[in-house]
Structures are given as structure tokens and as C-alpha cells.
Amino acid sequence: MLGWIKKIIGGRKVNTVSVETLRRQQRERLKGGRTEDLTALAGGADTDPEILYYLAKNNNPGIRRAVAVNRATPVQASTMLANDRDVDVRYALAARLVELLPELSEDKYSQLYAYTVQALGVLAQDEVSKIRQSLSTALRDYAKAPPTVVARLARDVERAISEPILRFCVALADDDLLDILSHHPEPWMISAIAQRQSVSDDVSGAVVKTGDVTATGLLLQNAGARLSGETLQSIIERARDYPEWHQPMALRAELTVDLAQQLVGFAGEAVLTVLEKRSDFDAPTRHQVADIVKRRLAYQRGRESAETKVARYIREGQLSPEVLHDAAVWQDWDFFYAAMGQMAGINPDILRRMMTGGAAKPIIAACWCAGLPMRLCVDLQRLVGKLQPKNLVYAKGGIDYPISEEDIRWQLEFFGVVPIARR
Image 1 (tube, rainbow, N blue to C red):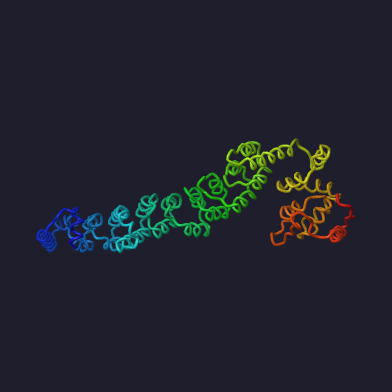
Image 2: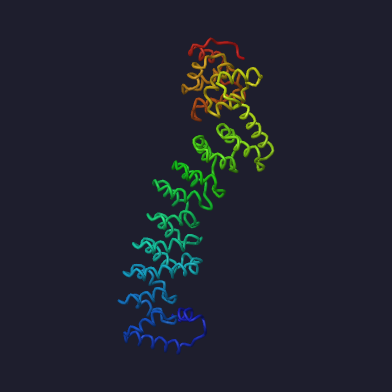
């Protein structure tokens, strides 16, 4: 008890006699029961903690409010005050506990910290929104805020309370963010999470999986958001319909050459310029991206039909496996089948059936006829045939076709294609 008194009166030296005298005087005033004496005791910086704890149960709400704001009041009284019937008592307590929290958070396993967190948890569920909002405002920028308390505030139904926590509170755990995102949250909640100063791979992926267009755009613009290759791929697959995503996507540090190649298939020239000028790419990547951009600009020249474009490529001697791969990545299926049909000597309608029938061997047979490298054939199994990784048939020895010429000819005959010598 002596330690408490020393702390309350600022650590100045006191002797046992003066402390005992002070306590006796305070108890006499407490027994007297006069409102002015009790109010003075409730607000006194040198009032004995035991007396303050007793006054926290007084019938007078003004006295209880004075106890709630008194820094000398023992933290053990906080849970009782957090359940007080008077709103102003609870509101005053919330302000005091938030002010006290930094002094206690260094020792998260202390009993005093536990009492404080317990009381804050009660206040975070208070029926009066101004109390919950005061906690949200105070804790949103506090890195050591109790995780259980901010998790409750983050799930609050009122936007003014949960949004600041969702967007700014670094103490809010990823597990809580993932749980919130998995329960069909309001669009503003998803956007708040997407704009956090730091967003992990898992949380970014969960934001994108909600399908929210605005939040995905905000995520792309957020330099503090980490995006995995899988998440970027899922964004690109939808980005064709959302031009506002294109430029922020082109600026993402995680963008790979493969993803850039997909992006240029539908991005406008302004975005192509951004891609081509990315100085943060290493030299080989810059060259690859520049080549892809140049091919795209040549590819989209004029308003040609697929057949006219194929004829132009043939005339210019430019119809190549790279052009075919570009067309598949960019999902220009009319040009793809017209071009591959010319290269393989197969009717485009038959070729379409071979490529989209759900099996690898007909695709391999068509690629063999077109004289395509087997590595490109693997890509076409995925890009055109939509085969799952477990169903892909890979090159033998890294470069050779994995099935015999006899098997290839059987596949061609099955589709009514007259086998010809490989080009």
C-alpha cells in the first residue's frame, strides 16, 4: 500500500506517521458521508486507493465520474466502472484507460494490464456508440493497442467506429482481417483494408477474392500492399473490363514479364508507354518488355480482320511461334486459329475442336503439324486448352515431343485431318 501512496503523490518522501494520519483523516471524511467531502475524496490525487475503490460503487454518478477520471484510482476498479449504468462514467473511464494503457503495455502479462484490457473489452461493446467511437479514435494509431479490443472494434456495425481501425490500426491481426473479409463485408470495409499502410500477401489475395472492383483498384495503387503472383494473375484475368486498373498494374513492382505480356494484350498506348519506360526493371526484363510492346503495336495496326492480318504477317515473313503465343496470351482467338490453321494446314474449325477438347494429345498433334516448339505447345495446353497443371504433357528432355509420330498421326486421323509431313 505504501508503494501506491508514493506513486500517487509523485514519489516524494513521506513517513509512515504522515501516511497513516492522512488515511485516518480520509476515512473519517468517508464515514461522515457529506457529498462535498466524498466528491473531494473521489477526485483527490492523494486519496487512498482503497477508498477510491469503495467510492466507485457510490450511488452518486458525479462521485463515480470523479473516481473514473482519477489517475490514483486502482485499475482493479475499471471493470466495475466499465459496467456502470451512467454513460458519462463509462465515457470518462474510456478516456482514462486509453491514456493509461501505454504505461502498462510494456508488461503485457501483468495483472494491471489484464484488468485494463478486460475493461476496454467491455467498453468496446458498449451500447452507446460515442464510447466505442472514442476508443476507435484513440486506438487507431496506437501500435500496442490490445488485439482483442481492436478486433471487436473492427467488427463494429457502425462505419465511424470500425473503419478507422480497419484502415489504420497496425495492431489488428491478419487473422482478424481475413476473417472479416470472409464474411461478405460491406464494400467500404474492403476498401478500408485495401488502403492499410501495410497489407500482406494473404490479405491482398482475400481482398481480390471478394470481387470488389473499387477495393482492387485501391489495392493496386497501394505501394504498401504485397501482391503474390497468383493474386496478380487473378487481377489480370479480370482487368480487361476495368481500364482504371491498367496503369496501376503496369507500375506494380511485382509485375513479371509473363504478366506484362498479358497486360499489353488489352492495355491502351499510354499504359504501354508506362511499361516500356519502367526504369526499375533489370536490363534483360526491360528488353523483353520493350519487344512485347513493339509486337503489340505492330499487331494492332489498322482495323484488319483476322484473315487479313494473317495474310499481312505471311506477306511480311513475320508469322512466327512468338506471334502465335502473343495471340493466345491476348485471347485473340479468331486470329489465333486463323494463323495456326495456316501454319498447321488444318481447318480453323477442326483446329478449335482439337485445342479445346480437354485432352493434351490432340493439342500436341496440332502443334506438331504447325512446327511449333514443344515448350510453346505446353503453354498452349494451358492458355488455349485450359488444362490443369496435373494434366499437362511436358517436353521430353526439355525440348522434344513426348509422343511418337505414329500416335500423332492417329490423333490427326481421328479429327479427320490428313497427316502431312511436319513443317
